[in-house]
Length: 285
Image 1 (cartoon, rainbow, N blue to C red):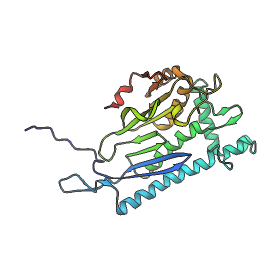
Image 2: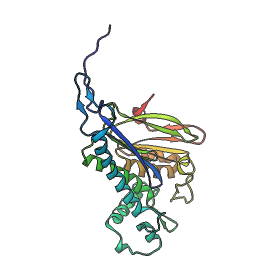
Image 3: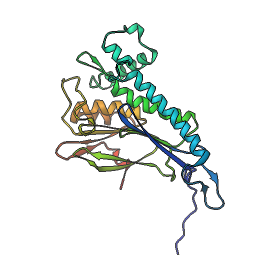
C-alpha cells in the first residue's frame, strides 16, 4: 500500500477539446482549444465529457475556431507577397504611396523598424528593394489569433502555424503543452521535447522552407547554422527574434541570451547543439 497527499487537478483536466486545421498563408494552421466552460462536473469522477468535443459544445467551439481562421485569412489577403491584390504586392509595384498605406500596414512597418533596431540590423523587411513583411506578420498574426480566443473566453489553447507555436494555460489533461523541436538534419525526427505554458516557440531553419532567410547585414542567404529555436513570452516575440538570430548565425544565440525571458537552442550542421542557460527548464523526456 502507498499513500499520497490529495491534490486537485487543474480545471482543464477532462474538459472537451477541439482540434481543427486549415491551410492559410501557405502553412497548415492548427488550433487546439480546451472548452472554456471546462466541461460539466461529474459525480466523483472529475469532469464529464472528457475527450473530443461533441454535440452543441463541438458546434460552439467550431464557430470560435472559424473566427480565428477568418481573421488569419484576412491577414493573408492583406500582407501576402504572393497575392497580386495584397497591399504588400501593391507596394512592391509602387502603386500606392506611403501616405496611402493602411493603419495596419503602418503598424507592421513600425514593428519591423523596432525589430531591426533591436536586432542590430539583422532583421529587415526590405531586401534588394523588395518588401516582404512575412518574418513579422506570421508570428504577430498567430499571436493575435490567440488573443481572439482569449476574448472568446478560452484560457487554455494551442495555436500552431507550421511548427511555430503559441500556447496558453494547460492541455485537456491538465498538463503543460508538450512541444517537439524537429531535427534539422533529419526533419522527420524530434531532437527535443519541451513542456510549455503561456509561452511562444519559433524555429528558423533551412529544413523548414529551404534557404529562405536572408542576412541583411552581410547580404545573401543565411546558412551558417541549421536551425535556431527561440522560446519567448509569446509567438510574436519568439518568431521575430528567431528570424534575426538565425540570420546572425552562431552569434545569434548570444542575442537570444541577452533578452530577458527568452531562451534558445541552436543546431549546427555538424550535429552540435548549443543552448542558453535557462533552456533546460523546458525540456522533458
